[in-house]
Amino acid sequence: MSEETRRAFAHPLERAEALAGPEPRDRISLRDHIVEVEIGAFQAERGVTQRLSFNVVVEVAPLEGQVDDDVDRILSYDRVTEAIAAELAAERLNLLETLAERVAERILTEPQATKVFVRIEKLDRGPGALGVEIVRSGVKQPRDLPQTAEARPWIIHLSNTAIGSPHLSGWLDQLETWDAPLVFSVGLPEGQPPQANHPQAQRRIDLLAIEQNAWLLAARDPRLEVVSSRTELDWAMKNRQSVVWAPSRIVTDAVDGPAVAPGHEPALAAWFAQNFEALGLMVIGAEAPEVETLPVTSVPVETKTLPR
Image 1 (tube, rainbow, N blue to C red):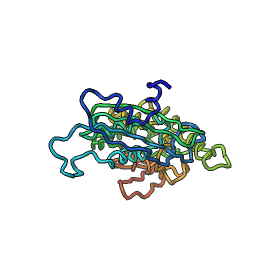
Image 2 (cartoon, rainbow, N blue to C red; image 1 turned 60 degrees about the vertical axis):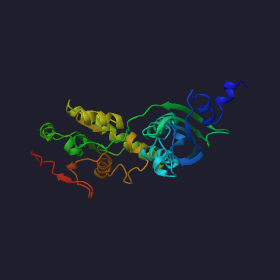
Image 3 (cartoon, helix red, strand yellow; image 1 turned 30 degrees about the vertical axis):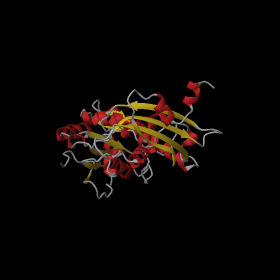
Image 4 (cartoon, rainbow, N blue to C red; image 1 turned 180 degrees about the horizontal axis):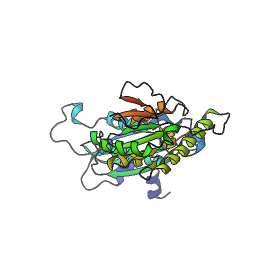
Protein backbone atom coordinates (compact mmCIF):
# COMPACT_ATOMS: atom_id res chain seq x y z
CA MET A 1 0.00 0.00 0.00
CA SER A 2 1.41 3.37 -0.99
CA GLU A 3 1.83 6.13 1.59
CA GLU A 4 -0.79 8.23 -0.21
CA THR A 5 -3.31 5.39 -0.14
CA ARG A 6 -2.59 4.63 3.51
CA ARG A 7 -3.20 8.24 4.45
CA ALA A 8 -6.43 8.27 2.44
CA PHE A 9 -7.84 5.61 4.77
CA ALA A 10 -6.21 6.87 7.94
CA HIS A 11 -7.95 8.83 10.65
CA PRO A 12 -8.56 12.52 9.80
CA LEU A 13 -6.05 13.41 12.51
CA GLU A 14 -3.27 11.86 10.43
CA ARG A 15 -4.57 13.67 7.36
CA ALA A 16 -4.45 16.93 9.29
CA GLU A 17 -0.87 16.27 10.33
CA ALA A 18 0.12 15.40 6.75
CA LEU A 19 -1.37 18.65 5.42
CA ALA A 20 0.06 20.83 8.17
CA GLY A 21 1.92 23.95 7.17
CA PRO A 22 5.29 25.13 8.51
CA GLU A 23 3.70 26.58 11.65
CA PRO A 24 2.39 23.96 14.09
CA ARG A 25 -1.31 24.09 14.85
CA ASP A 26 -3.28 22.95 17.85
CA ARG A 27 -5.99 20.41 17.07
CA ILE A 28 -8.96 18.90 18.80
CA SER A 29 -10.50 15.66 17.59
CA LEU A 30 -13.69 13.68 17.88
CA ARG A 31 -13.33 9.95 17.18
CA ASP A 32 -15.97 7.36 16.36
CA HIS A 33 -18.94 9.45 17.43
CA ILE A 34 -21.98 7.28 16.59
CA VAL A 35 -25.42 8.76 15.94
CA GLU A 36 -28.55 6.94 14.77
CA VAL A 37 -30.56 8.99 12.29
CA GLU A 38 -32.76 8.79 9.19
CA ILE A 39 -30.74 9.79 6.13
CA GLY A 40 -30.34 8.70 2.52
CA ALA A 41 -31.53 9.25 -1.04
CA PHE A 42 -32.90 5.75 -1.62
CA GLN A 43 -36.50 4.89 -0.86
CA ALA A 44 -35.32 1.97 1.31
CA GLU A 45 -33.64 4.52 3.59
CA ARG A 46 -36.85 6.44 4.31
CA GLY A 47 -38.76 5.66 7.46
CA VAL A 48 -35.81 3.85 9.03
CA THR A 49 -32.76 4.95 10.98
CA GLN A 50 -29.15 3.94 10.46
CA ARG A 51 -25.92 4.49 12.31
CA LEU A 52 -23.53 7.24 11.24
CA SER A 53 -19.97 7.45 12.48
CA PHE A 54 -18.38 10.91 12.75
CA ASN A 55 -14.66 11.56 12.96
CA VAL A 56 -13.78 15.24 13.12
CA VAL A 57 -10.49 17.09 13.56
CA VAL A 58 -10.46 20.86 14.05
CA GLU A 59 -7.35 23.01 13.73
CA VAL A 60 -7.59 25.98 16.07
CA ALA A 61 -5.80 29.27 16.29
CA PRO A 62 -3.38 29.40 19.23
CA LEU A 63 -4.61 31.15 22.33
CA GLU A 64 -3.08 34.40 23.45
CA GLY A 65 -1.87 33.99 26.98
CA GLN A 66 -2.47 31.05 29.29
CA VAL A 67 -5.42 28.68 29.16
CA ASP A 68 -5.74 28.99 32.95
CA ASP A 69 -7.78 25.78 32.97
CA ASP A 70 -10.77 27.84 31.76
CA VAL A 71 -13.15 25.98 29.43
CA ASP A 72 -14.55 29.26 28.13
CA ARG A 73 -11.17 30.08 26.56
CA ILE A 74 -10.97 27.01 24.34
CA LEU A 75 -13.05 25.42 21.57
CA SER A 76 -14.92 22.78 23.52
CA TYR A 77 -15.53 19.27 22.25
CA ASP A 78 -19.19 19.95 22.98
CA ARG A 79 -19.23 22.55 20.21
CA VAL A 80 -18.27 19.84 17.72
CA THR A 81 -20.95 17.40 18.87
CA GLU A 82 -23.48 20.24 19.04
CA ALA A 83 -22.69 21.16 15.43
CA ILE A 84 -23.43 17.58 14.39
CA ALA A 85 -26.66 17.45 16.41
CA ALA A 86 -27.84 20.82 15.11
CA GLU A 87 -27.41 19.86 11.46
CA LEU A 88 -29.07 16.47 11.96
CA ALA A 89 -32.02 18.21 13.63
CA ALA A 90 -32.38 20.93 10.98
CA GLU A 91 -33.86 18.70 8.28
CA ARG A 92 -33.72 15.22 6.84
CA LEU A 93 -30.90 14.99 4.31
CA ASN A 94 -30.28 12.69 1.37
CA LEU A 95 -26.50 12.98 1.06
CA LEU A 96 -23.58 12.54 3.45
CA GLU A 97 -21.81 15.16 1.34
CA THR A 98 -24.42 17.75 2.28
CA LEU A 99 -24.25 16.82 5.95
CA ALA A 100 -20.44 16.98 5.98
CA GLU A 101 -20.47 20.42 4.34
CA ARG A 102 -22.97 21.76 6.84
CA VAL A 103 -21.17 20.34 9.88
CA ALA A 104 -17.88 21.82 8.64
CA GLU A 105 -19.51 25.17 7.93
CA ARG A 106 -21.05 25.33 11.40
CA ILE A 107 -17.80 24.41 13.13
CA LEU A 108 -15.93 27.07 11.16
CA THR A 109 -18.24 29.75 12.58
CA GLU A 110 -16.40 29.22 15.87
CA PRO A 111 -13.85 32.06 16.27
CA GLN A 112 -10.93 29.74 17.03
CA ALA A 113 -11.55 27.19 14.25
CA THR A 114 -9.33 27.65 11.18
CA LYS A 115 -9.60 24.29 9.38
CA VAL A 116 -11.80 21.25 9.83
CA PHE A 117 -11.56 17.65 8.65
CA VAL A 118 -14.87 15.79 8.64
CA ARG A 119 -15.37 12.10 7.91
CA ILE A 120 -18.88 10.61 8.04
CA GLU A 121 -19.56 6.93 7.43
CA LYS A 122 -22.73 4.86 7.14
CA LEU A 123 -22.28 1.68 9.15
CA ASP A 124 -25.44 -0.22 8.18
CA ARG A 125 -25.59 -0.01 4.37
CA GLY A 126 -23.33 -2.95 3.61
CA PRO A 127 -20.64 -5.25 4.94
CA GLY A 128 -18.29 -2.27 5.37
CA ALA A 129 -18.47 1.42 6.13
CA LEU A 130 -19.52 3.78 3.33
CA GLY A 131 -18.58 7.41 3.74
CA VAL A 132 -17.19 10.76 2.70
CA GLU A 133 -14.37 12.94 3.98
CA ILE A 134 -13.93 16.64 3.39
CA VAL A 135 -11.45 19.35 4.39
CA ARG A 136 -12.60 22.95 4.71
CA SER A 137 -10.96 26.10 5.98
CA GLY A 138 -11.69 29.77 6.53
CA VAL A 139 -14.16 31.45 8.83
CA LYS A 140 -17.73 31.26 7.55
CA GLN A 141 -20.83 33.22 8.37
CA PRO A 142 -23.49 31.05 10.00
CA ARG A 143 -26.22 29.85 7.71
CA ASP A 144 -28.95 29.88 10.30
CA LEU A 145 -29.13 33.57 11.15
CA PRO A 146 -32.60 34.51 12.40
CA GLN A 147 -34.96 35.76 9.76
CA THR A 148 -35.53 39.48 9.73
CA ALA A 149 -39.06 40.70 10.24
CA GLU A 150 -39.18 41.73 6.55
CA ALA A 151 -38.55 38.13 5.44
CA ARG A 152 -41.33 36.56 7.51
CA PRO A 153 -44.26 35.53 5.31
CA TRP A 154 -48.00 35.45 5.52
CA ILE A 155 -49.41 31.98 4.82
CA ILE A 156 -52.70 32.02 2.90
CA HIS A 157 -54.51 28.69 2.76
CA LEU A 158 -57.19 28.34 0.07
CA SER A 159 -59.95 25.76 -0.02
CA ASN A 160 -60.90 24.24 -3.37
CA THR A 161 -63.86 26.61 -3.53
CA ALA A 162 -61.52 29.54 -2.92
CA ILE A 163 -59.15 28.35 -5.67
CA GLY A 164 -62.01 28.56 -8.16
CA SER A 165 -63.42 31.81 -6.78
CA PRO A 166 -63.81 34.82 -9.09
CA HIS A 167 -62.41 36.89 -6.18
CA LEU A 168 -58.97 35.22 -6.40
CA SER A 169 -57.30 37.96 -8.44
CA GLY A 170 -58.77 40.65 -6.21
CA TRP A 171 -57.57 38.86 -3.08
CA LEU A 172 -54.07 38.72 -4.50
CA ASP A 173 -54.24 42.45 -5.32
CA GLN A 174 -55.12 43.20 -1.69
CA LEU A 175 -52.55 40.84 -0.21
CA GLU A 176 -49.75 42.34 -2.26
CA THR A 177 -50.31 45.66 -0.47
CA TRP A 178 -49.41 44.04 2.86
CA ASP A 179 -45.69 44.46 2.17
CA ALA A 180 -44.84 40.93 3.29
CA PRO A 181 -43.93 37.74 1.42
CA LEU A 182 -46.97 35.65 0.48
CA VAL A 183 -46.98 31.86 0.52
CA PHE A 184 -50.20 30.15 -0.56
CA SER A 185 -51.09 26.63 0.44
CA VAL A 186 -53.81 24.30 -0.78
CA GLY A 187 -55.23 20.91 0.12
CA LEU A 188 -56.28 17.79 -1.69
CA PRO A 189 -58.13 18.35 -4.97
CA GLU A 190 -61.73 17.33 -5.49
CA GLY A 191 -62.22 13.57 -5.66
CA GLN A 192 -60.34 10.85 -3.85
CA PRO A 193 -56.72 10.25 -4.82
CA PRO A 194 -55.54 6.67 -5.47
CA GLN A 195 -55.63 4.57 -2.31
CA ALA A 196 -52.78 2.39 -1.03
CA ASN A 197 -52.81 -0.13 1.79
CA HIS A 198 -49.58 1.25 3.28
CA PRO A 199 -49.56 4.48 5.38
CA GLN A 200 -46.26 5.78 4.05
CA ALA A 201 -47.27 5.17 0.45
CA GLN A 202 -50.62 6.86 1.01
CA ARG A 203 -48.92 9.84 2.62
CA ARG A 204 -46.77 10.30 -0.48
CA ILE A 205 -49.78 9.92 -2.79
CA ASP A 206 -51.74 12.53 -0.82
CA LEU A 207 -48.83 14.99 -0.82
CA LEU A 208 -48.39 14.61 -4.57
CA ALA A 209 -52.12 15.19 -5.05
CA ILE A 210 -51.81 18.42 -3.05
CA GLU A 211 -48.98 19.46 -5.36
CA GLN A 212 -51.22 18.91 -8.38
CA ASN A 213 -53.71 21.26 -6.76
CA ALA A 214 -50.89 23.78 -6.21
CA TRP A 215 -50.23 23.80 -9.95
CA LEU A 216 -53.94 24.34 -10.61
CA LEU A 217 -53.88 27.39 -8.34
CA ALA A 218 -50.72 28.78 -9.96
CA ALA A 219 -52.37 28.47 -13.36
CA ARG A 220 -55.15 30.79 -12.19
CA ASP A 221 -52.87 33.84 -11.86
CA PRO A 222 -49.52 34.55 -13.59
CA ARG A 223 -48.16 36.17 -10.42
CA LEU A 224 -48.05 32.80 -8.66
CA GLU A 225 -45.23 30.25 -8.95
CA VAL A 226 -45.03 26.78 -7.43
CA VAL A 227 -42.02 26.12 -5.19
CA SER A 228 -41.03 23.02 -3.27
CA SER A 229 -37.64 23.54 -1.61
CA ARG A 230 -36.50 25.63 1.33
CA THR A 231 -34.00 27.39 -0.93
CA GLU A 232 -36.72 28.41 -3.39
CA LEU A 233 -38.95 29.63 -0.58
CA ASP A 234 -36.16 31.68 1.03
CA TRP A 235 -35.38 33.32 -2.31
CA ALA A 236 -39.05 34.04 -2.99
CA MET A 237 -39.54 35.61 0.43
CA LYS A 238 -36.48 37.82 0.08
CA ASN A 239 -37.64 38.94 -3.38
CA ARG A 240 -41.33 39.34 -2.53
CA GLN A 241 -42.40 36.69 -5.04
CA SER A 242 -45.88 35.28 -4.35
CA VAL A 243 -45.62 31.49 -4.39
CA VAL A 244 -47.66 28.34 -3.89
CA TRP A 245 -46.18 25.72 -1.58
CA ALA A 246 -45.74 22.21 -3.00
CA PRO A 247 -45.34 20.30 0.28
CA SER A 248 -43.86 16.87 -0.56
CA ARG A 249 -40.18 17.69 -0.19
CA ILE A 250 -40.32 19.79 2.96
CA VAL A 251 -42.78 17.50 4.74
CA THR A 252 -40.97 14.25 3.97
CA ASP A 253 -37.55 15.75 4.72
CA ALA A 254 -38.60 17.31 8.03
CA VAL A 255 -36.95 15.81 11.09
CA ASP A 256 -39.96 16.77 13.20
CA GLY A 257 -42.67 16.45 10.56
CA PRO A 258 -46.34 17.34 10.95
CA ALA A 259 -48.43 14.95 13.00
CA VAL A 260 -51.48 15.80 10.90
CA ALA A 261 -52.37 13.80 7.83
CA PRO A 262 -52.21 15.62 4.47
CA GLY A 263 -56.02 15.42 4.30
CA HIS A 264 -56.24 17.90 7.19
CA GLU A 265 -54.98 20.72 5.00
CA PRO A 266 -55.42 23.82 7.22
CA ALA A 267 -53.54 22.05 10.03
CA LEU A 268 -50.76 21.21 7.56
CA ALA A 269 -50.65 24.89 6.59
CA ALA A 270 -50.43 25.80 10.29
CA TRP A 271 -47.46 23.46 10.76
CA PHE A 272 -45.75 25.11 7.79
CA ALA A 273 -46.52 28.60 9.13
CA GLN A 274 -45.02 27.77 12.51
CA ASN A 275 -41.86 26.33 10.95
CA PHE A 276 -41.34 29.46 8.85
CA GLU A 277 -42.13 31.82 11.72
CA ALA A 278 -44.94 33.32 9.68
CA LEU A 279 -46.53 36.62 10.58
CA GLY A 280 -49.90 34.89 10.46
CA LEU A 281 -52.11 32.30 8.78
CA MET A 282 -55.25 33.20 6.84
CA VAL A 283 -57.63 30.40 5.85
CA ILE A 284 -60.11 31.23 3.10
CA GLY A 285 -63.11 28.97 2.61
CA ALA A 286 -62.29 26.41 5.32
CA GLU A 287 -62.29 26.06 9.09
CA ALA A 288 -59.12 27.48 10.61
CA PRO A 289 -57.12 25.41 13.11
CA GLU A 290 -56.33 26.68 16.58
CA VAL A 291 -52.68 27.76 16.84
CA GLU A 292 -51.25 29.35 19.97
CA THR A 293 -48.02 30.63 18.45
CA LEU A 294 -49.34 32.84 15.63
CA PRO A 295 -52.48 34.76 14.65
CA VAL A 296 -54.98 32.78 12.58
CA THR A 297 -57.85 34.28 10.60
CA SER A 298 -60.74 32.42 8.99
CA VAL A 299 -62.40 34.15 6.02
CA PRO A 300 -65.61 33.05 4.26
CA VAL A 301 -65.12 32.33 0.59
CA GLU A 302 -67.78 34.91 -0.32
CA THR A 303 -65.68 37.72 1.16
CA LYS A 304 -64.40 40.24 -1.38
CA THR A 305 -62.40 42.47 0.99
CA LEU A 306 -59.92 40.59 3.14
CA PRO A 307 -59.45 41.64 6.78
CA ARG A 308 -55.99 42.87 7.73
